Image 1 (cartoon, one colour):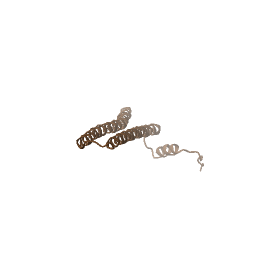
Image 2 (tube, one colour):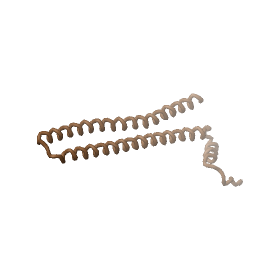
Image 3 (cartoon, one colour):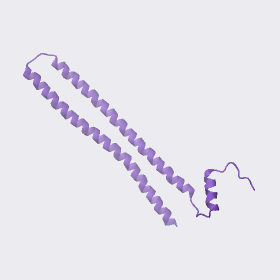
Image 4 (cartoon, one colour):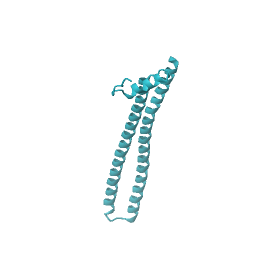
Length: 142
């Protein structure tokens, strides 16, 4: 019996196995290309998600710094004694501005997350469309 060379690749063994069983010819390279494209799309999607998360985190950090500066400024204004009505007015103004800023910041963060998710999902949708076109083209050849 002839000894097979040790350098047979998995693809060679797979092809030989298919021939021995008299299976229809399978374009292994097309299958591998298909899965390579799938993995590349997953990688691009993950990178887009990571970039989006990074930008959300950076923006939230900036928002917290701005809030801390505003709180510090407000605390400095409280140190000066004054009319109780003025103090109450300043507190009410600070509460109103804090509430408005919080709503604006939450909306901005939600928009950043939505944009990041949309980009990530769109990469996968494009790949699914491409995969379906490849499958259709494969069936049309036969």
